[in-house]
Image 1 (cartoon, rainbow, N blue to C red):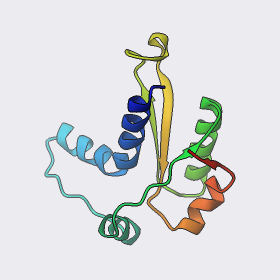
Image 2 (spheres, rainbow, N blue to C red):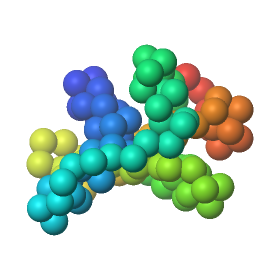
Image 3 (spheres, helix red, strand yellow):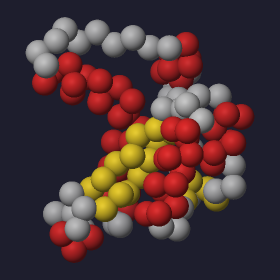
Image 4 (tube, rainbow, N blue to C red):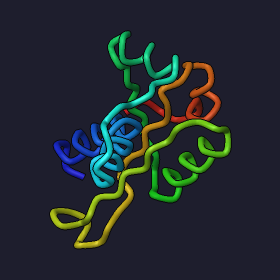
Length: 115
């Protein structure tokens, strides 16, 4: 991916835990009121730290996403439509796990390298 695409896809993923619920409420014409748990409140109030890590394949990205879900963590998987890159093929591009405690996230991502 080009650098700008990488940044955009990671940005989508990092906010999906909020935006998915907002989109759902909009589509159902519901009042937009979001309940945040304590970890989410702490993350938002504390500057919304993000750590960017590297995987080597779509399969590895999907496996991390599924591992996080099995552990009961929030995980947002982003799929690019393929209109501007990836030869027109929809492609998994990024995943955001959390917000959660660093030690909890390290159980899933601790073996990955920084990007």
